Length: 234
Image: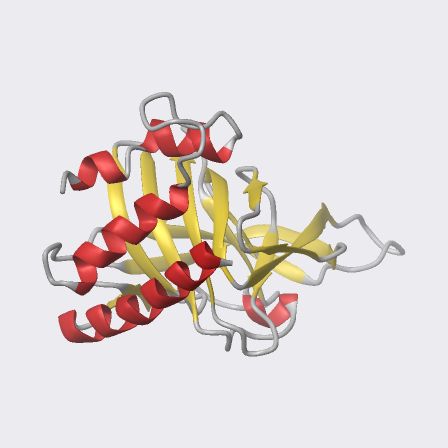
């Protein structure tokens, strides 16, 4: 199989935005492309190891093409139950996401720079997230203090697509212990930085995105592939 063909960014984007695929036909589903690639990983024909993200999910980085990328995110259903615990953050890139199975909830978070007293005080400090090639994320506190307030939660189920703009603060949660997976397309915008809402008096620190072992990756992918196929039959 031509794996780059299975995960062509432009073709996936057209399909997710409702345009179908000119080369594969209007009935082609991105889920088919995901199933093809997951099958290659599960069989050991594609040497790709899952990355455990600090926000609690596993990431399969399938395509990296300059400022664009395609990943599959696997949620085991045990992500924290509320926006404060789930990690409120804002991407430096535009996100287009397709739910492969399960349900994924996004909570938009309104962020406002605080005003002098007697206005309400700040709730968080904004941190910049700088990622290194070795998987280390350095969280650097800024002087920006903000007040945040979660908005209405929106849940997307299997076969549904959602978008998140660069710079939009949010948290993503999976509830009720239900596994879920998403196909994620990202396009980095110039001059943007990943942001995170941290404690008011928190200091800078580092986190590490740890690689899973090859067999652990294949075992996890095989379970995800079964759920993808089950979704195709629904």
